[in-house]
Amino acid sequence: MTTVEATGPLRPRGVDADSRALVLSGWSTVTGYGVGRDALRDGLLSGRSAVADLEAAGFPGPARAAVVPGFKAADHLGRKGTRTMSRSTAFAVTAIDVLLRELGPEVTEDPERIGLVLGVGQGNVQAAMDFTREALTASRPYHVDAMRFPDTFLNRAAGQSAIWHHLKGPNTTIAGGRLSALLAIGYGARLCRGGHCRRLLVGATEEYSQARALLVDAASGPRDTPAPLGEGCLVALMESAADAAAAGRVPVATVLATHFRATPEPETGGAELAECVRAVLAKAGATADRIRLVAPLGEHSEQEEAGIRAVTGRSAMHWLHCRPLLGDAFAASAGLQLSAALAAGRHWSEPADLALVTGIDRDGTVGCALLGRPA
Image (tube, rainbow, N blue to C red; front, side, top):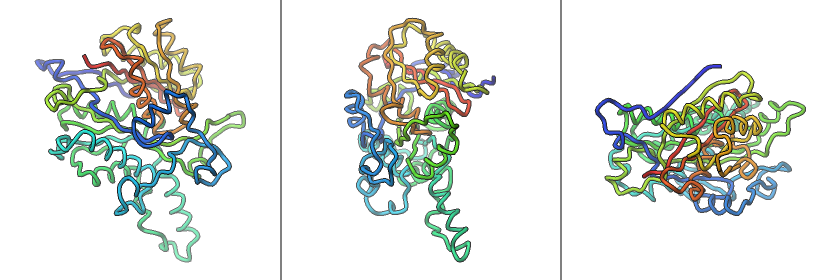
């Protein structure tokens, strides 16, 4: 077993800890419940599943999935420049647009100092398959729609989002499977603490497509019962607590630590997850009894719960299971878990309370993120 990434509250000597603390000052989301935090909060609090028949949602069925209802990029961003925009890219651009409008122009007044770290899956697999099919079946290999080619790039969503919103700081794409959003937070924390940017937009995006459904089906074994697919996006603003206070923004969470490991057998990854939970608690200087909310991935639910219980024991915690409600959103999975944790803030409302977002991915990545309430 190998430790593949670890991010904690490391600070240069002589720097005040409070001024170096990183917080999430705002967030926006696109989910199977709709666009925005309110849609997510209402769906979660009611326990309503976003999974529905695809034919009823305007997709070729008869399968079921949790797709964003009635989503059209032009409805949120205008018609100009959105005709060839993929759903995953449109989700990210829309979520950022909503967030920046809420936070105001001060956030981007220095575009060189605001960056973007965005988690994705395999890129836009539908675009890649369609483009390849055209090259093989057209009368000439070059008789393809060149406007569709950029969507085959892994960093299309991050690049297009930065261009659309004039973000000129670091621009990074993280392809880390279902834990991509947590990996993006860990990477973003290092960028901020290293002085590479003043603030960051961090998150992950994923879309439903027939091509993705085919890949999931092909990767499933004869005994597997894959969860209905989902899609969505989370984007949050990460900055220092000092900058948030200076701008008059009230943080929704403090980014305390992230930790990741790898396991050759995800089906027995509980022990590795327990090590990750112990690591983030140690970095934060916190005890397990302070964890009040847990948002697990749920792909290997028994192992995941066993790993968490091995550290927290019988601590009173609220368990927030997103997968049955929002489906398997692949790259956006941990982002939706994080969104749900922020939306369910009443379960960890005191300054000493902590929230834990965890995951054991079938590809062998194990990890978690620990969030706290700003004092």
